[in-house]
Amino acid sequence: MTDELLFLSHAETLDLLSPAEAMAVCEDVYRMHAEGTVSWTDPPAFRLDDDRFHHHWHVKGALLSEIPISGVRLYAYYEDAERSTVGTLDATRYIVLSDPVTSVALAIVEEHWTYAIRSTAAAVLACKWMANPDPRVLGLVGVGTMGTTALQCLAELYDFEEIRCTSRSPVTREAFAEKWSAALGVPVTPVDSIEAVVRGADIAVGGTTSKEIVSRAEWLKPGATFVSLARREMDPAGWPAMDKIVIDDFDINMLTPEFRKTIADGLFSREAMHGEISDLVAGKARGRESPDERNLIHTVGLVSQDIGVAHYVYRKALDIGAGLRLPLPHAVGRV
Image 1 (spheres, rainbow, N blue to C red):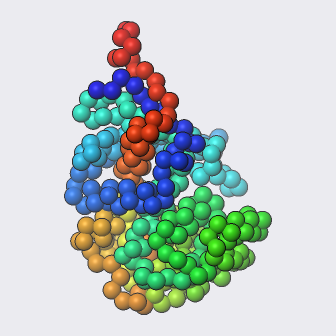
Image 2 (image 1 turned 45 degrees about the horizontal axis):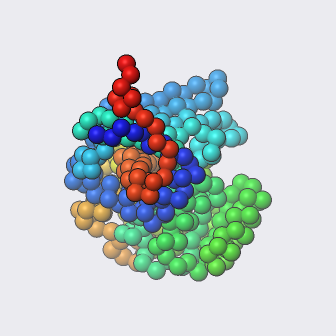
Image 3 (image 1 turned 60 degrees about the vertical axis):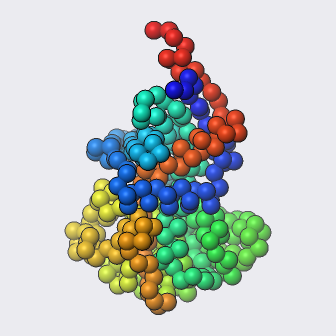
C-alpha cells in the first residue's frame, strides 16, 4: 500500500506521453473492452449544465480490472455560441486514480494533454484497419487541439505527400500550416473551404467544436476514410452511403443527443454498424476489404481510455521520479 499520492501537472504529462504511446494504450484498452474486463460507472456520466453561466461539469469513471486500476475523470468547461474552452488550458481537467484492491488514492493527473492526445489517438488508430494502406493526401477540418493531435498521431502511421487544412480563422490556419510544414517537411496548405479540404483526401479528419453539420459524404472520393471526432463532423444524412462505419462504443454514443437523433431519424442503427473499434482490434470484425470503400470512423471518447492513459503516465512518472508526492492521511496517522 502506498503512503503517497502523486500529483502530475500538465507540463509533466507532456514529457510522459507521446502520440505513439497514447495510441498503443488506447488500442490495449479496446482489447480489454473486447475481452469484457472494463466496468463503467452507473450511470456512465454525471453532468451539471448551467445555461446562465454557460458552465458544464462532467464526471465519468471506469475500472480496468486487468491492470487493475480505477479512476474518475472530472472536467468543467465554458461554452457559448462564440467560444468553447473544451480543448483549452483554462478548462478544469483532472483524473483521480485509485487502487481498486485497497481503494487507496494513487494519483491526481492534470489531463489537458492526456485528454487531447487520447481523443484523437483512439479514433486515428482505427485507420490501421479502415484506411487504405498508403494514403497520400490528408485533410484536416479544424486546426485546434483536435486537429493538431490528429496530425501528430497520423504522422506516426503514415508518410503523407500533401496535407490540407482549414479553420474559421485564416490567421490560425495559416499559422498552423507554416508550423507543421516546417516540423514535418511536408507541404501543409491552408484553404478557405471545408469542401476543398475533404475532396480528394485519402484520410479526412473532422475535429471542430461546431454543433452544426460540418462535412458531407458526397465530398469523399472512392477509397477515402473520414474520421469524425464526435457531434456531426460528418453529415448523418450521408452515413447510409458509407461502405463501413465503426464507432468506439454504441451505448456510450447513445448518451449524446446528436447520435440519438441520427438513430431516431433512421440514418444509422446497431445493425448497420460494421463493428466497434474493439472488434477490429480483437479480430472480431474485418477492416477494409476493397480499395474503393468509403469508410467512416466515428468516436465520442471512452473514459476507460482516459483512465488507461493516466495510469500509463502515472507508472512512467514513478519510474523516473516525476511529479509531486503528497502524504496520504493513513500515512500521517492523524485523525
